[in-house]
Amino acid sequence: MAVDMAVLLTDLEAETGVVDEMVAGLDAPAWDRATPAAGWAIRDQISHLAYFDAAAVVSARDPERFRAEAAALQAIGDGFPDVVAEQHRHLSPEQLLQWFRTDRRELVATFASLDPALRVPWYGPDMSAASALTARLMETWAHGQDIADALDIRREPAAGLRHIAHLGVRTFAFSFRQRGLDVPDAPVRVELVGPGGASWVWGEADAGDRISGPAEHFCLVVTQRRHVAETELVVYGPVAAQWMSIAQAYAGTPAPGRPAPAAAAQGGRYG
Image (cartoon, rainbow, N blue to C red; front, side, top):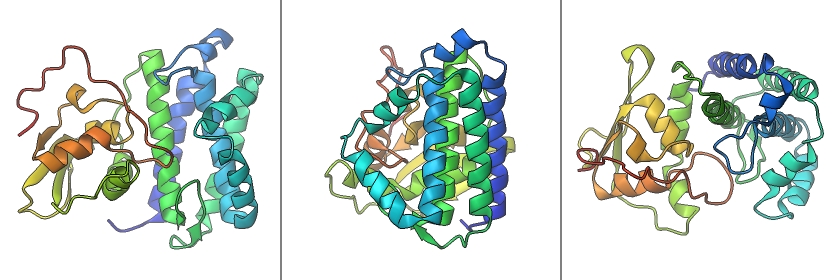
């Protein structure tokens, strides 16, 4: 998939608008509404996005400062995102929204001038500027999903899903290594239907393991916002099935993902 920073930035700004629209009109009590992320309210989803937008800007502008600050934060332990959330719960909804808007504008302005191949540090391995921007898009969409779920809002799939799906495919090996598992040799073919019926395909045509279905559903699984049994994805082969059970497209320690629904009808979903 060719890298186009202008397209990435356009899609990020579109997703930013979706999140902004969901929260801008909420009254103060609604900001404390629980989301599917355990212990996190809507306010925590917004402070998380704003905080790590600011971190991404530091990563691009001052890598050594970022590394020092990231090391101090990670020294807290695996629960450092919860600490970040707790540290900002005193902020008002107006302050949170302004923080998110200001730091998102700064993120866009910073990355617009970067070489897509520039290596920047993060909380896991270093990555290219294009990958870092894709990760911010993925985080915006995923945490936006938590907000949408809390508000019972159905978002329309957008073109930016292709970047998230691509990141999901690229983190195949990462998902296994994060759990201390050997990375399977068997290739997996991914065939997704994007918005408007677009066909998005990764992998060899003759691969024995395959995943197919709506791109939105694939993105929900790789960002651990839905269990695969809650989706319309069709999964064939043991490697594909194992991947979908542990897929994680974001940096950080292995997460358990969403539990399977109590009465999940899995017939025909696996082969």
